[in-house]
Image (cartoon, rainbow, N blue to C red; front, top):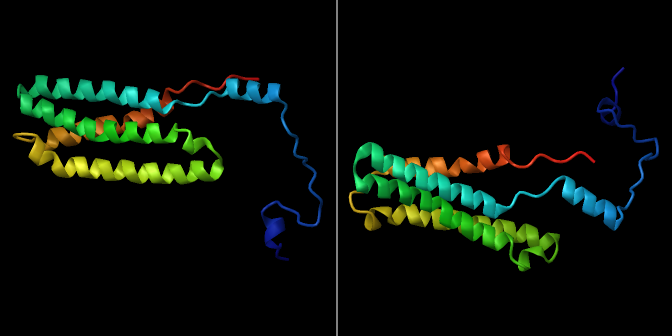
Length: 160
């Protein structure tokens, strides 16, 4: 005997909903916000700046060539500048009007971020003399990975 899809997935469509929606009080909402603080996009951008500086200095130190150091720094900047634009856009007043503008703003600023990154990489050979693509990609890669480090090192939620 085959079960219908609702019962097979553990849902019974004939039984009434037993869970009720309960609105939080202002104090409960504040306690919830404090227990799980949001990760600031500016903290991530700052972490990317430190990583970009470190990879540029490391590339310059290992290679002994300033052009390699500048290439790595430019690769990092191709992530940092668009990320800063994105963070600025997301934290603007327009993006916090309501959920619809926040969602729309997210996609608009993400598109701007991608366009600026691609444009910066495209004009890199014209701006950096003796461009080292390997160093540029290393700076880009290391700086991009800071998103993951920021997620791993974000403050842990407090237990209520």
